[in-house]
Structures are given as structure tokens and as C-alpha cells.
Amino acid sequence: MRWPAEAIWEAVAPLLPGFTVEVLPEVDSTSTELMRRARAGQAEPVLLVAERQTAGRGRLGRAWQSAPGDSLTFSLGLPLAPADWAGLSLAVGASVAESLHPQVRLKWPNDLWVEGRKLGGILIETASFGEGAGARYAVIGIGLNLAPRTAEGLSTPPAALRDLWPQADAPAALARLFPALVRDLQAFEQAGFRAFHARFDARDLLRDRAVTLSDGTAGTAHGVGEDGSLLVHTAAGLQAVASSEVSVRPAAP
Ligand code: BTN
Image (tube, rainbow, N blue to C red):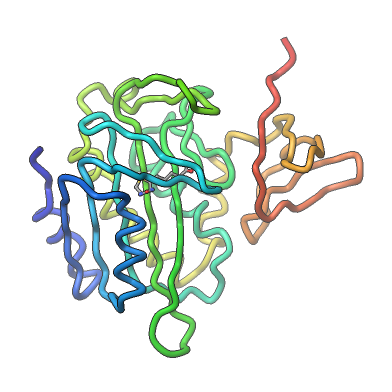
């Protein structure tokens, strides 16, 4: 596969001094690899792309499955020092969705969905880094399905980017979304989730939908708060949910 490593480097290096791009034919997981490097002292910004992951990870300890050629899997590692980390995954989701296609919606907290199916996911982890000053090394892992694949063993059947953008391949999708993602991360570092609230709202898939929280509480989603928490109308009043699995109940026929 031909990757636009040079073009990406030229667009991003002026924003992120010391930035490098690395493409591996195979790795266990781009996020696992960058977290390993961070623990070993890596502090520079790096984009790590894998053509194949043998142990891709999703949120909540789940596996992330992808097939070479049919998916884009990469992680960006960089030092970040926002005053408040709340809402980072929502900001990343808004950035990626906007770059990809007007029909890509966001399922709180950080899934990319198209027409009721999951297109991609975001996994954010951080490692401590240096002394004090509030900076941490953030590893932002993104997986996108490009071609339709089997729903076997998945809780949600996947969507495919090629349904929206027939010529999409992994290098083209990366080139389209990555420079904007870096600019948005820098905007988040400066201004926090405030800069992304309206952008998230515009693509919020759950708004006004009946949802069930992981503790079984039922309610209706009512957008997100200033800190990126999900607001849910429940029998007990409006609840702000900081982190949970939220399932969407099918709409009544
Ligand atoms: C989720 O939906 O639960 C998040 C999925 C994140 C998958 C990406 S693929 C690149 C990076 N490496 C991983 O092992 N996971 C993330």
C-alpha cells in the first residue's frame, strides 16, 4: 500500500515539532505499541499506522478486529496539557466525523456511526510523562471500517466508509482526516471541550433517543453537558452520565 507519509509529515511537522510518521506492515496494536514506547520514555509526537493488527483493542477491554486493506488502524501519540481533559474523546470524534462525511454521526462517548451501524471507534489512553506541569502523553487510537465485513461476534453490525465514499482506501482516509485532527487536538488543548460542544451536538446520534444505561436505568438522551457528560432524562430527573455503556433502545415501530 502507498501511504501519504511525506504529505502528512509536511502538513503536521510545522504544528508538532519532532513529529514522525511510521507505517508498520504488522503490529499487535498501534495503541499498545505507543503506550509501551511511552512507558519506555518516548515523549515525541508520532503517528503509527499499521496495515495489520494482530491484537487490536477497543474500549472496555474489547477486541478490535480489522482486515488489512479493509480498514484503517492508527494511533497518534503526543504530549498534551489541556487544563481539563473532559470531553477529549468527543472532540476527537467530532473532528474525524467532520473530515470523513456529512452523514457520519457520533454515538456518545466516541463511536462513529452511519445509518444505525458502527463505522469506527476511538480509544484514548494516557501515560504520565516528565515532571509535573500537567502534561501527559496521550495515545489516540482510531479504527475505521472501509469495506463491509461480517457482523459475527460483534455487538453492533459494522458500517463501511465505502458505502459513503466508494473510492475510499486507508491511505486516502488517513490523509483526509489526520491534519485536521492534529489542529483540533491543539484547539482542545487551548480551549477544552467548549470549542467542540456545538460540533458534537450537530452530529449527536443519541439526542432525543430512548437509551438504557449500563446499570439498567432507562431514559431519553438530551445532549451533552459542558464537560462532555451525557445528559439523560430519567424517572429520577436529569442525570449527567460521565462514563458508561449506553445502549439505544430500538424506536417503537
Ligand atoms: C472502540 O470502538 O472500542 C475503540 C476501537 C479503537 C480501535 C483502534 S485501531 C487503532 C488503535 N489500536 C488499537 O488496538 N485500537 C485502536
